[in-house]
Image 1 (cartoon, rainbow, N blue to C red):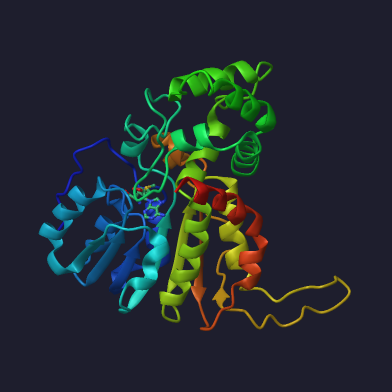
Image 2: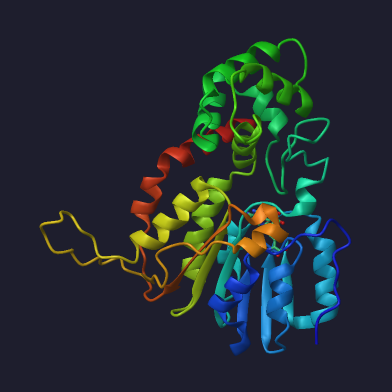
Length: 334
Ligand SMILES: C[S@@+](CC[C@H](N)C(=O)[O-])C[C@H]1O[C@@H](n2cnc3c(N)ncnc32)[C@H](O)[C@@H]1O
């Protein structure tokens, strides 16, 4: 029977839901880890089968209320952990079939003015999803212009990173920058701009990534998911921007393919081949899904099956070490 739980906030459409279900096949029964519970769209679908269990994570304290409804409805088939998914190593191992990550933000978070994730928000800069050590206000007011420029450039791919960080550092001596002030400042600095996306998109993306330490969350979330998963289990990830997708793509590809040093030589055996990659290209939403839910348009789904224990992730960590070092700048704000 269909569960009758309805979240009492803004409707969030679970992205690529049918595609996820066809990868994880919950109709066969098992335990599934939903690393990004949100509005519970994936969890609810998985729990339709009475043989299934879900262990869900979310860092946002607003997810607790909905999780309580799930516990009431599904009893011991559902467990909620209010924590960051990088901590999934702490779960006791069950017969886990798949670990699912749906990165990004749910609709109600984007519309939550207090969180200030959107450039349409009003008031004090924040951008904390939950369980954070500092806010966007701290970043904008306390980091020097070189540090800000690095964040804007590497996490937002912002061409005007130096110009904007210089303008921020000059402005903050005079008054406190609120969300709307930051938007105004960006608009002023990016005069000759005629692209389709909003002028503030890239700066806001970079600040959200930095405040929520999304790069290290993803990297350690993936590594710990691998460690927790039994052989033949799946890791499934939906990403929403190229930086996240680059990390997930490298993680799956690098540990599933034999390496070619030169095109004139045969591939050398990859001793660290721990995944089977069933789909090298990402799965993207159909035109129909994009029409009914435009925010799904940038989603990419990648997944892999674990085939071996003992993975060594030194290469993965060193590949993205520059990004981890930029996130580490945040330590001085804690
Ligand atoms: C896109 S929404 C997930 C929507 C969900 N799949 C659904 O169908 O309703 C992402 C959710 O993941 C949570 N989240 C993001 N990063 C997280 C992290 N590192 N640890 C735990 N939760 C996280 C956010 O708070 C948000 O609720």
